[in-house]
Length: 205
Length: 205
Image (cartoon, rainbow over all chains, first blue to last red; front, top):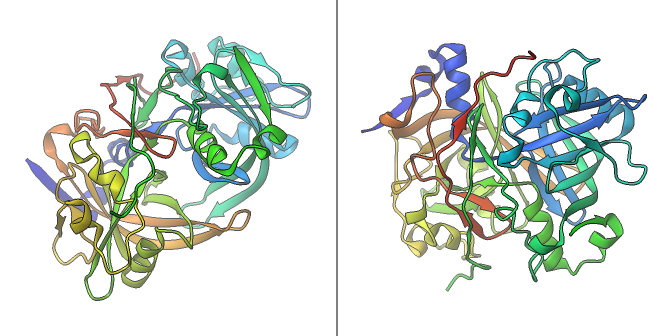
């Protein structure tokens, strides 16, 4: 049976129940690990389900973060060094990737704690995850405050992309389903994704 | 073979190739139709792959739009009425949902053009898609300009949620895989998603 929950019903939910509920509603989310290092080169890794495409020219992505949670270490690092990486999560990287979302002390590298490998492209200061099949080097552009709830939109430009050549199709599309990338729903559910159907550019007729 | 593409390689790509490539990199994206109406009640429908969770209390989502493209009609409408809906896309709604992304003239309702049904919750001015299993009524909070590329972040609060009662689990998680929601990659690829594995709240030990 389909029901309609109104705002008063949502506001009356217990806090954790509401967090699970609201986090499920937007649809499937990307699963990325964000890799950073501080000015001394100490590394940090955290889960992100909010990476969003802003534009292709210049190539811009953004993600949402809170100023005061576990993601604070990543935020401090990317503001200190100006760089970070996004790394796709595949099924074989679970549950290690999810475990990187735990609240480790600042002096613990999640790479070591969860058993993933920090690697580097040239002299780029932020580590990528060696186990990821697709990693993106990002340069910070702007941290945009979202006044209504105190979150931050972290906007960056692509510096480099590392992925297997064979999954880039003739028209530039990257078949991430063939890379075994997973999708997230809610706060903690990781889903295998099947091959897609491409529909092409839609015309009004 | 894994390759590293640097920014100069990306900037040298032909425009359409680069758009396909960059749009593929962020990982899987949610598939939502945005439903709006103008001040006279004429309806509009458009595809969105950029809906992102901003917070659960208050319940806030955002999506990215361009001021001058096909999505302009949706933007004009939600700014005029202050409301809009997000509607999950299931396999049986394809290719109609993708076709809603075509550049129809302003006086054509994409609901009619692609064969989906506009329906309403109470006196809420924006239509939802009757064929969707999960629809969300949104009230506009802010349209935040992203200076670096001229896109806009449309931020809204949830007014109501319409979904089958049976997919809401005991802890509030909504099993959207059971609703047959699809995931998007790139500009035009739609993917079935399998049941997920839940890992729970991660602790540092």
